[in-house]
Image (cartoon, rainbow, N blue to C red):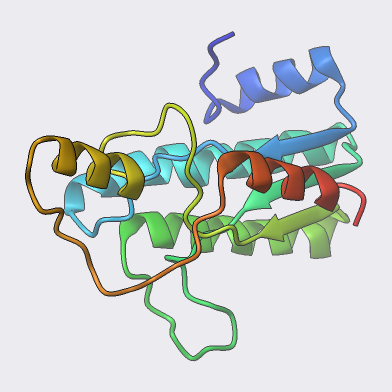
Length: 166
């Protein structure tokens, strides 16, 4: 099924038809680079979809909604208040909406911060596909200096599934 998750109507109809107990919302543009060309896609795909899902899940009284944060967004209480990219801004704002929905409407939301998850079907610009393809071309991959733990998608999904009961 293909669905525009930024459409309040489409999301509402989907949740109304399926009546899920839990919603795992992972839709994302998934590009953390700071280029301006990423502003509108991250706004629409990361932030708008999150708000549409929160609204529908709240209205239909879904038991719990799970959201994925990002290593790119500012950490609450760290003093860092300016996001490093459009993706970081969208994820940060999505988290703010989730906290607001929890406080104002009682929406049960669990937010995890999985950092760099990898798995099948990942786009070429992501770390592992990028490095592998560069090496296959006989090129040295250009990498930054920020080391991160990168859980496999299966481990991430198991962790997310576990949070639904937290």
